[in-house]
Image (cartoon, rainbow, N blue to C red; front, side, top):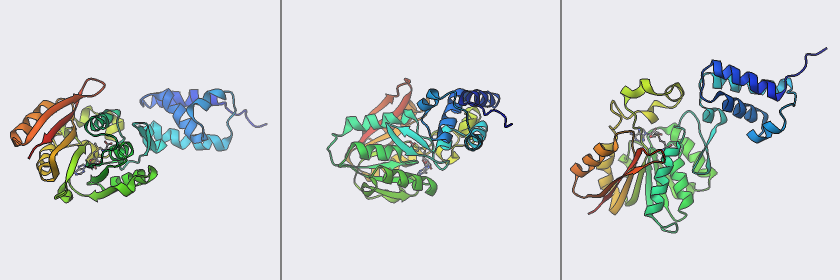
Length: 289
Ligand SMILES: C[S@@+](CC[C@H](N)C(=O)[O-])C[C@H]1O[C@@H](n2cnc3c(N)ncnc32)[C@H](O)[C@@H]1O
């Protein structure tokens, strides 16, 4: 006689227990997401069928994904996707998993331009293309340049630009900051560049340090090394009245504002914006000729 097959409820309980012993974040939620993904269901469907016995082929689909999660691999890489500003993005270990904090950059751009306005912007360090794609979707007359130093990241961004049908309005450039963008007339620069200090690496979660690309996380010893060269280049590519929106790490905003003021009297309207958690997350400045 064949042994009785485990039910979905039992598998979820066992998987949660396994992930708990592995000390991964949110073990129950992870077990549900992994199981739903392996079975081709959405998470809600799982709860409608908790007493369903699972077949061996179904268990065989769950096991390797669960093992990956057990190593601490982030759910977004296992699922291959992450939502940003209500849009679905493909993500791979070549790119940072887009964070909700970065949605503030989108909100700030919405305050700067009318929805039907025609303007040009650059997304520096585009990663998955989350900011670039979202802005192109929200501003149908806008055109963009997306840069990244990583060719793997640019490939992911290109895929997302195509998925969302906005690739024809975006030029992709691989390179350091704005090096290959000089001479253009840009109305806006958005940048969520790496801003974590290398000396902070030890305090980061294992799921971040071991799996997300270092190139996307660390901005030198203190974390703020990329801002000065970016701002110098920005002065060469922005139109009169053009704006920079820079995402920054904890505690970096006041110092960066000071640096911008010291850099040139042409920078005006320098401001700090807080994210939903109340952290100083974006620095904004306008260039006047
Ligand atoms: C923090 S991630 C942000 C990705 C994406 N903008 C987002 O918000 O999800 C930073 C990105 O900047 C890229 N990057 C790092 N150094 C760079 C440089 N010097 N020039 C251009 N891109 C850089 C990394 O490859 C990475 O994709």
